[in-house]
Image (tube, rainbow, N blue to C red; front, side, top):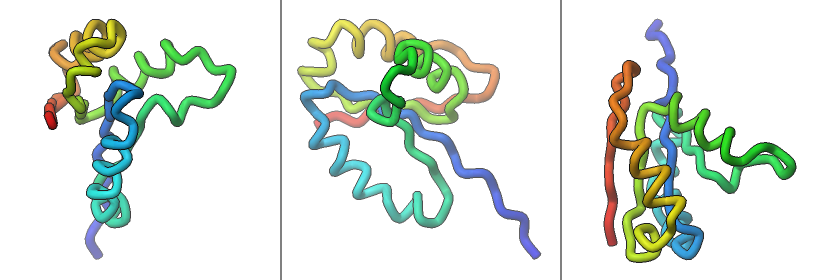
Length: 103
């Protein structure tokens, strides 16, 4: 019997103005989620009252893939451009992979 593998953890970073695009991307990735090949995380999954900056930093440190939905709004956002972009280029001992999707 083959062993079940752990899904690849994917952090999706996007400007909130691009949330509709993020939802469309997630719809395209649903088949991979159903097959337990990936698990997606985004800031909208943070439970209200949680320290959101800490939750984001924790996920950025532990995921295998950081998916940046690059747009004019992404680059206009000080948070997206400054924090997420720098974090995605930081070397990781876990072998983090980086993907940038633009539209």
